[in-house]
Image (tube, rainbow, N blue to C red; front, top):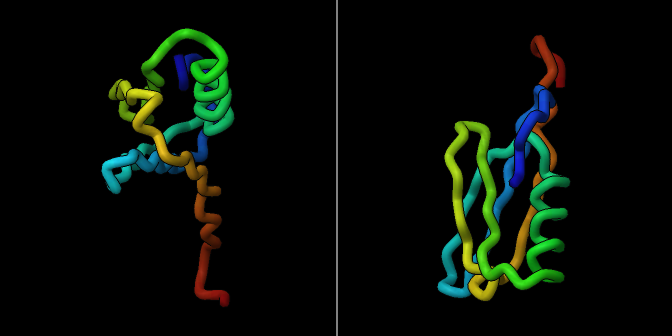
Length: 83
């Protein structure tokens, strides 16, 4: 399972494209856990990738429908009015 027992404070966005030309965008605390879970599903016999987002919502995605997985870095925003 993704996102259990992780106390990271920054949130990452994970966007998963499916073959129907739609994307599922989730905020997760541990993007490495998403990629590790995906690789494990590909190597195993499971057909569903399960991801838990930062709101504790659980999503199951059929592996055959995944076209790509994109992991973005969190926005680094400074404090103040600097450029």
